[in-house]
Image (cartoon, rainbow, N blue to C red):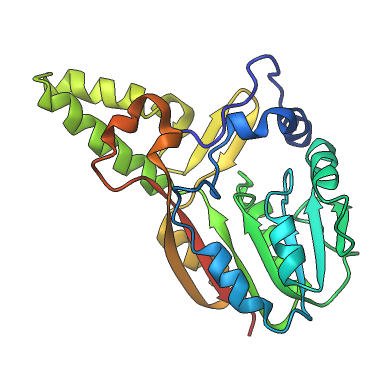
Length: 264
């Protein structure tokens, strides 16, 4: 179920260096929210916000830049932010023909110095800072970056989706006649419970640390940061990206959470 499988040859603790090293295998190692089989509310929401195309948008944690060409088509100015130089290098290459995209190497907790005000901020699977203090500073930085009436939207990985997948795997094992105790062990192994702190929503693997979200937490933390009118919707992922367990495709797929919120 893990959303990121780091390169096995590069254990490390420095997050920026990890993401830089992961950039070369990004498509192979990460769940793709833009996959053709994924039901994703993000792009329609961004299209609605583009309006007369005279707006500025910032992609916070742009990664290798999969969203940037779309943003460049729909917005007047695009700011692309990431803290990993390896990711920015690939994103620059992808956008070399786009004249309205500007790149910045910054942590999401330190967005001072970016051109202001920004009309729209988007963060796709980048609000995963494991320390809650840093995560709160990140949300406050985004709030300060946006103009009044600006919109913040994005996608966060869902810890409740791991619980859902565990339930399906448990029932699948039980249906084969496996005793419940063994079925629980089987489900925990298939859902990679050893990589998660399911109580606190944390994912750890060879130096990578990410925060996974509960749906009620999304609204709670955004409101604490000063946002209002928070809207949530599921990003229904593709079973095709779940390898050996895609035989569960008769069930609704796992999900991440899409959010949209306003700065008063």
